[in-house]
Image 1 (cartoon, chains in turn yellow, cyan, green):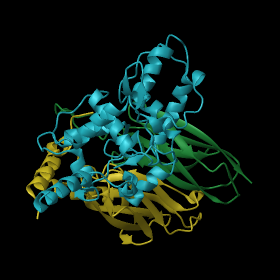
Image 2 (tube, helix red, strand yellow):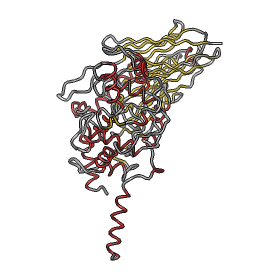
Image 3 (tube, chains in turn brown, orange, yellow):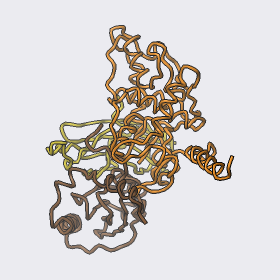
Image 4 (tube, one colour):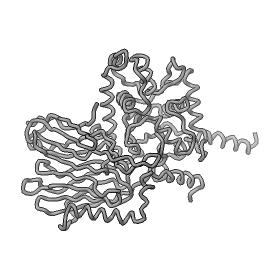
Length: 157
Length: 252
Length: 106
């Protein structure tokens, strides 16, 4: 049972909503962002099918802070001239923009692997798509839970 | 003494002791983070704080001010320095933070203007100095002349304040390890300062972090460099005595 | 002032796959944040990163606002020959940073 004190503290913490969120209270927000995700996906793969597999997207399942989430992608591939990963794309479905990063690789990479840190606006599914040298597309998805940190400093330095 | 009075006395004393964390139970905020965030701190190649450390190294060697002197002209290794701050400054008659000490050196010895609090340059210099104490135990010197300030900081840590009528101690001594709005409440030991805080996406000082906390509990926020803030920093460093410095730390 | 830091193994065997880690100091302002008075803070991000190995591009990255501040970019490359790795970050408002690192391949 939540005590009154716990309730007050939680209320205070959740009251610190970032300004950007307030400015984006679009009633169709979720639907619009999903549509943007699909459009971004189409931009990358066109009409080709995308198969799940060969790609491994690694994200912490429960993250400390949505401002900086370690993300890594690796793809099973010999990375030879004949058979390699040409590009890796990462997309989100709930961020203000669906595109996160696009990486162009080639046989010189040795391994199809990449790591960075990303911003995630909300609990959501993140998708990684690999474009192969034979024109095929493969993908992996990972679900992440994003929490808000306590004791924010809105308006303060 | 009547049994009832004895029982009352026991609870009063037990309550006072229940506040502080036993020395062997103290844990750095590092241990409360996810493994992924820990890895960011562990590797100098991925720790964003290192960008400031390198900037600090360059600034350390650069001549500045009317005296045209670099920090490096007077100082060699700064190993162990950050571990004993806040330290007593005889000129001011009170303890000062590392940032304040850097600024008084700039003004007195380099004849240069002080750097603003939380400026990139001041953070870079304090990161460079603090990095050199990495792995060393925190050891602020408490003696007759610093004790009154320690007591003032201790009092501030235990004082209920603000709209929520909360004291630092209630969360960080009594409820550490539990969750507040999805995040784990740390014990609040300043082991990694200046820290790269993921929430700030920037490096920041202990003073900045404490102002966030006080703002979070809806209390009057003390100014950076104010006496009450520095006294609190002194108490926190004393409370963390013996714990290892991790600067530049990464925190959520 | 260090605007970027690169970590490259100083030596490697021919054909070995080496790990490269890079960090750039940049706020990566998304363009979605607002000031206290509600004004939109304009976007200011690093847009692209590239790595060339003795003049041949071996990695290129297109960055979007979803990349966290002070971006980490880590990737691999095959140690083909001794020489120089050149790293380049290009972003909004004329931001350009170049770093070089030697690599010795035996």
